[in-house]
Length: 500
Image (cartoon, rainbow, N blue to C red; front, top):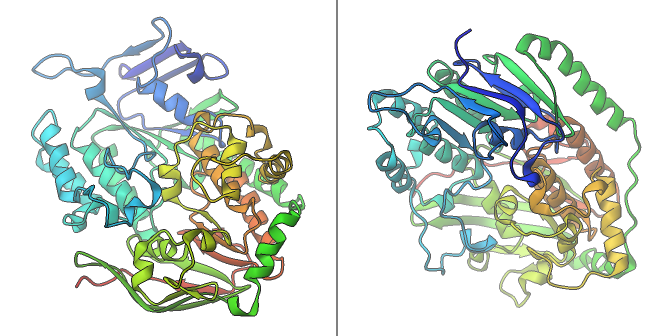
């Protein structure tokens, strides 16, 4: 075997906050494409950060042997690049959650073409034809004139990937590459990864066995902060599928017990269940257009109390835009014929009058929720529909939120700082946040992003149990049909709107 690009012996992070549970060994040779796999909170991303050099190790545990150029040795940051989709706006993030939809703000969002040009100009070398081919393979060139706030979460991921490819690293680390991508986009990205695997060395971090690329050479399995095994791809696949199925079966065998609804929220549910609010949402041929870009066009849709809807469609079809109208986050709701809970938008109700009936989780919420608070306070912020906690939480409310955390299998995270959690754990806490006030309408936009198989199975079972209650309404978005709970009884599929 050729000399490894990276070798780590008895690795321990220099900063105590980023240490795994035990020292570990790791090596990767050129084209020895590696997957890091494990359940939520196992330390996958932390290990990837240490391998890439983003988190320094103690002593001389970390050694590299990257090829030099004719101009001399390269810096480590030039040899290794990481694609993490935690910050998908690439430095142009909205200042607050609703800013993506608020055109009254003066902060302009750059276009796709502008960001790609910046990345091309910042590259150490002039991009060659092969790199331009890789960028084209992401599919983002079809959206060059779009401001990035009009991109879907899946399209933002394609953009971030394209920008990183201009650096042409020797080793590329990608964290959960398929999150947010529709079926067609996942197939496109898989083809891109195969192309990259012929010229670069890849490390891919995944929570789903199905996301492991077939060209993988070795799999690093993690659990509870330990590197428990490093084995060839074939050996891993021979046992891992059975282990995952066993974990899911164990979850499914346990009955789901939901926390009771506190009396202070009972009045809200009675209000939402009045005859006037029998129609939860009504869109009367609604269109949404920004600068000639139709995000929605002629949507005629009615959601009745107690219905359970699947909302599907490809990336860029307008699913998140539609949900932003229902959740009162998009000001265009005032200019379109929309009725929510029996009230025409703009007839005097505030956004808080609407939000008090809704529990909501979405990729955009994960992207913008950066609060250093205990996880239980993040969950409790759902009681008041805020990003952050700005009202005192009573002991009874805190106990109630703790029971919801336990229901989702994450009670042990209650007192952990939210920002210290893994991305999968953070997404799980935000999912809990959607349930804590027992909303009459639950809006779940790709709620299983980043969750491992056991947590997906548990969350799906909780959703199903919750919807067995009278008058509970569900709108759920997913690109994986198997994730939909059995209660789904209606389906709306959106297609990409035609440009004006």
